[in-house]
Image 1 (cartoon, rainbow, N blue to C red):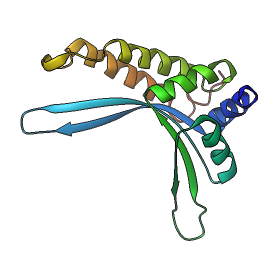
Image 2: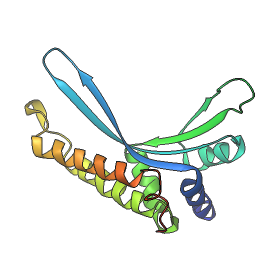
Image 3: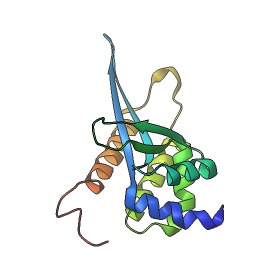
Image 4: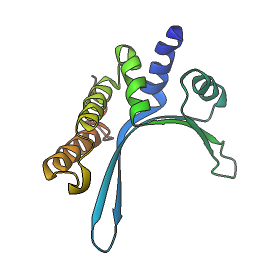
Length: 150
């Protein structure tokens, strides 16, 4: 498996996305915010996705846009599974190194401040999670700023 780490890191750099996904839910009495670390690779070629799934696990999904478009194969890891994989890939990442560093820091923070019982999550923890989310969004911006060399 060690020989495949640089290859997977290259796929992450070229075809991957490291993000913190925000989900909001609302009930009559409360608003909920959930932040999940996600690592995804998406491409139209199935073989690399199948190979990486066999070696590193993950959830493989296929999306078809119809018409003349080819199906998109996506491999996704969430939460601690993404953390473990990013820690393995970190030394080999080039373009997404900052993303991985932030993602690892974020997930370790979440694991440290996870369970608060019936009192709910303290506001300072929610504020810190939002801060990580915003920082990751800035790293994932597109345009001239995002195209600057690392």
